[in-house]
Image (tube, rainbow, N blue to C red; front, side, top):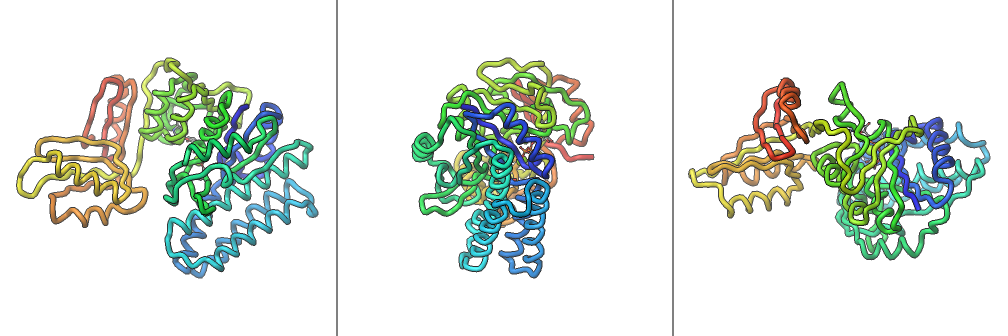
Amino acid sequence: MKVFKFGGASVKDAESIKNIVSIIKNEGASDTLVVVSAMGKMTNAFEEVINSYYNKLEDLPNKLNFIEEYHKGVMSALFDKEDEIYKEIDVLFGELGWFLARNTSTRFNYVYDQIICFGELLSTKIISAYLTKIGQNNVWFDVRSYIKTDSNYRDAKVDWELTKELITSKVDATKINITQGFIAANDTENTTTLGREGSDYTAGIFAYCLNAENVTIWKDVPGVLNADPRVFKDTTLLQQISYEEAIEMAFYGASVIHPKTLQPLQSKEIPLLVRSFINPKETGTKISKGANLEPLIPCFIVKKNQILVSISALDFSFMVENNISYIFKKLHDFQLKVNLIQNSAISFSVCIDNKFNKFDAFYNELKDEFKIEVQKEIDLYTVRHFTDNAIAKIEEKGSALLTQVNKETIQIVLAEN
Ligand code: ADP
Ligand code: ASP
Ligand code: MG
């Protein structure tokens, strides 16, 4: 069995849906499980709904209307007016309206997951119905009955044992299966999510549980490039990469693959193919066991909008185990993700992501106990297989605040010019 994953950009409008449906027909007409994200930027649009709902803003009906019109606009280009799909989509909007009217919870992360999931439910219903319409049998299922997690809303952890049992007993591996990425459920049937951009990870979960032959994630780029094409002008396609290399790249911020996707695949040696949905004839990038990086060139990864924090003791004492472990506990409590650590005798520096907007609370908690220097809006550049030339290319972008070098990797924290 094969696993395919199509992200938002690949299903953003009716033309795109026709394109991926032809890819499914040509390359995955049976024995395929297809994981799909919400259409285009719909997850962002649902985040706006959540914000308006949670803060009781007047623009909520407009925000909802935008989403409904978007989906119905795409549907009108794919289906006749009488098609059954309209009823199914109305049922989903009905469920969403029911939740918005009945919910009494004020827990933001819980509310977020119960609303955000509709993006994936809508997109997969539409794609499944379109496949059926063109005569391609397929099975749609609600992934929330297959992938089970804990109740850590918005960043839920998979219950592997239960998930494996459910997937292996319920998926018909001979069919074309269509399901949602990103979303899951806890043991009380509430929706949970695996973190933004988590659909790649969903594909990895299914592939692991089904012992898939391979996973293909279809992207708007030719494959994994040696640098983010949005930041660097000249990029080169990497034809093959080892799991270790790809894990390092994803971990340091190469956003083409969700970082959690690779480990389950690596443990069963299931190759991950990254291919272009724009040029599906091209082979793209193959990530597999022990594969040497080909071509062997420097790879550039950037994480934007980081915070560099340097912490030292108020009484001039050294930064040692007990205060460092205390600071780490606080970083964890405030969900601040550490991307780089540097320690000297008297100060401890970390470069962090403020994804959950809790940095100020963290700062306030520690500011009376430590001397804290903060530099916001900085970038973290990581270069794998660096050369002098590659380092110079980064350093011309701004002033380096901190540099860390390992055998294969250099990391530079930079304030842009
Ligand atoms: P999806 O549609 O699956 O959500 P994403 O938009 O999350 O896809 O990921 C694809 C994007 O990742 C590309 O359009 C590209 O801008 C960006 N990207 C960042 N780093 C890389 C890289 N090293 N190679 C290829 N693409 C990259
Ligand atoms: N739709 C979700 C998001 O935009 C999940 C994904 O696309 O991977 O974050
Ligand atoms: Mg994405």
